[in-house]
Image (cartoon, rainbow, N blue to C red; front, side):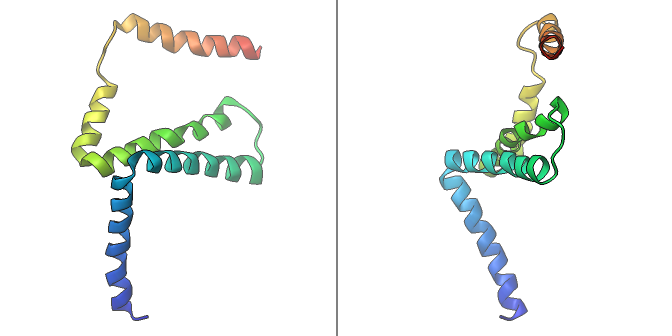
Length: 114
């Protein structure tokens, strides 16, 4: 296969993937979320066993977060990602409730571990 044929195929294959993601967003989200999470689990917890701590368990939860950002970018573009990030910093309740949540959950975790 010539170099020109390879160059011509790459935009087609990436546009096909984008079309597939746009055509089936919910299925694509779940497949991506599971793939990211289980890749972490298989590589870092099975191949290189690490002790089971909050530090080693937390990254596997990022699969849905990354998949959500990717699908938002695919469907809505940069404007959609900007809007999603803007919603992260919108305060819907008073700051004391956020402080309560940020302190109570780790405290309960450490009480349960102790």
